[in-house]
Image (cartoon, rainbow, N blue to C red):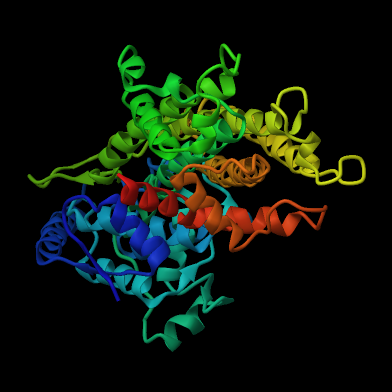
Length: 510
């Protein structure tokens, strides 16, 4: 079992994916354990004093003016978790919960939250147990962080609520006992430290970035197949033309397109004298659109890595022993890039759908049968596959509307401007999945279009991708039940097999 070390510094994006999706275990470094213990001594000193300190000896939010006696402070922390675990609606995916827990553990391990070493160790043990707290879709406003989702995680730590254990939902107390874990009784500051962070929205951003990095390569492959199958030109992707507008993402996508189209007999067959002056925008401008999304992903990655290096809590314990309240928990930096990415995803899906539609229109597909049907009129071919694409694209356009501008005041106007970052993250997850399905339909369509160009054959890279596709999805022929073909292509897209085949074969030819 892979083990991720959690120290006083940042965990990496790869660490998050390994824990969230790969089930990797975590271990605290000696440095982190020392930092946690040192920070706790400052909290203990403050707890023993007479001054009111937010999160230690006062109430929370709009109730922060009330001083809490020492004998009630454990109840204060437990009550905070119970009352804030107010999520509702469908259960959030296990990978999101595990990512969120790792990121909360990373902040606790930084030595700026003031929790006890035993509590941090118990949180790591809960994550390593494989038990997944039940977290719900609705409840977070993204300020102060993802309070409700993180509260459901903390609820499991204190032995309450429910968890997923081996695929089934169980009472937490029973599951902890079966896994040899004991509930934690929280001390001063600990309840607040367990829930005050951007970990849910950040975890979903990191997972979305991992998916988008792969899907951008799929998009370039799909565009190359569409250019090839529609007898387009690769001259517009030349490096010297791209250098006239030096956006790095555009250069990367154009380079991918050139590589995927290299050595194509179909391209060579009409390179001279085909009478076409310019390809449509959806073909010719693929690197500009894809590249813009690549650059958006690059910026979002920068923000994510800054956030991974952050210790998000309030109040925070500083190295000199001060405990200060602040606003670092506000999710705006993450929420904005989540919305930014949703715009890019919708645009990427939109240009893919337009390339697909050109294959199906006999007036624009340069000699292919209507809808790529085997016997047009009796067979409908891929007509309705494009409808499916269009429906997904319509959904993605709605999801591109930003959540982060929709602040809703809460907590008796104490929290009067919130980020809605959790909602931005949830809609981005839906959008990324939709993009994968749109690209799958383009690849399925382009593969059929290329094969209908026989006896002309595709280039080595696109031919390798089509060969992998044909292991799961049959080639041109009479109409058949189409939904399983789309789903099989979607699985190939999300697995990375198509791009891997194209790049591997291209590399061998270089």
